[in-house]
Length: 239
Image (cartoon, rainbow, N blue to C red; front, side, top):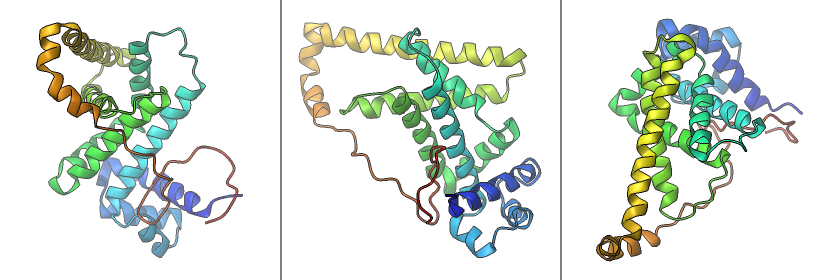
């Protein structure tokens, strides 16, 4: 059974996309999306109370969903783990609608009032990648993995926006270099743990870090103003 809420969200977002290169993620784009999609204005404002900002976040969430689906369907068993991460970043960048919409989004989330929303979207992408790669960490590593990957992904997107190489070859090489840098940090951490002196010096911080736990998974939210990407499967009920 069709979910009318999801249908209206998708219709508004699809209608907005042609306007973004010209008007950005603005009120003008939001109003044009309502007109073009013929979605009831009251419903549109309920679904996207922050108008253009919520539309931009919806597109970002859609990209995460596309990337996660592609990862689930891909056979990555023969790849080294660092190459699986690189593949995930590549899939996520390839899931972007266009460079124009991403540039406009970057400008939008660079504004102080939108910075927290942009940072959360970046974190959500890192979380989606680690989740799709079956990350099993439940301690402080849950946070450090996502924080590190957020930095790598964010830098990779900025590089991609200025990349004019054939098939984005330079971007994928940039991703590989950034992941290699992270792997060197992990090697240094491993050495510190095995070194008797460093291990003694780090005993206190290590004990404190051991008390940090990953957050409990919350049930899926689907309320006005919250866009949650959902899997492509038949809906069993109408909301």
